[in-house]
Length: 448
Ligand SMILES: [Zn+2]
Image 1 (cartoon, rainbow, N blue to C red):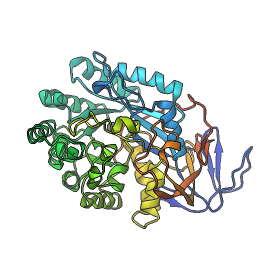
Image 2 (cartoon, helix red, strand yellow):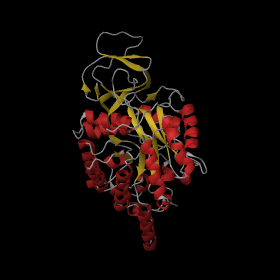
Image 3 (cartoon, rainbow, N blue to C red):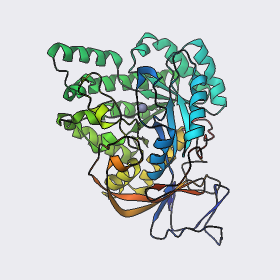
Image 4 (spheres, rainbow, N blue to C red):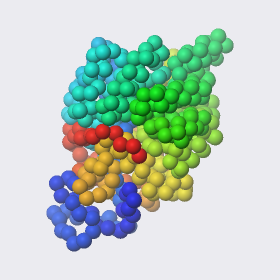
């Protein structure tokens, strides 16, 4: 067993969904013999999109809902997910929480929590922040990549002050809207609108400028700030500088930026790799791995936002509007184990920190989630560090029909996934019924 500050061979006793005993004599109704396997805390993925937003801003049509998405999560060792919840036009943050909570309660197999998106920093929404935080929704998502952000920066800063006062944390998408807009105009003028120009439509300077602003906003308002899906060495440096000065900035990256780099966009089907930001250079990939190793990157989250391959490759698309996102909930932890722990880039303790303990702390779930300790929820992954599978997205649990890693050999897969004491997946077979996941109780954000 490997957990926060603990490693050893130990029996784990579970009662009423929680860890009741570590070591010593015990007996129970069911025993799992997991000798030779690796037990770690269940994955906490704080950044997923499982409310298909026919209604959401942009009308994105991601193909997973809470049922199919969390089925993939459990098969991949993730027992808790944090969903990005968009209000419909005219709705408040509280409305967004209400309808997404209703969907998740009906459909989710994993435990879940919700981040409402602050689309309009108006009085009604600002008034929602304190009551939502009191009810355990201690985070808010903000997009610097939407043009509306630049029209209302002062109001957004007011919102960040409110989030801080309420004991919460802001998730921030860091790409600069004006720079992206200008780059798209330049590409159109040149006639370079094919999908392979996607990295030029959203270049690294757009990420760096927005990240620097987010750090500056955190410095000004004191609001704990979580930079989602950071992709470049230069943006990481901006966060590192801020942290060195004591500013409460935290960093997430995602699997795309660990396993793939920009030249993929030259492939005839390169559009299938599109996320925002785009894939970066090999030197950025190295920086992401280094960041996970030295602690400059706190969390690995999927940003799971899957499409069907035909939609990703729709020839009507230009570089300016590629469909963003891929399925990653089932592959995230095994691939980090395979390419990180097995190859000696990360220790098991670092693996546990970035996939479970750190996100649990930042989003107020710790110590119920994110650790193997007496009193914690019995969310456990029993992994077989030697099992090798070849990735085939079409046969996995997401409704997406491909994985960006199709054909890759990955070693180290969950043998059992246990959620609140129940075996909810065995090998690739998921046993939990829809609606068995619950809204995870949250306290205030905790620094790492
Ligand atoms: Zn996202």
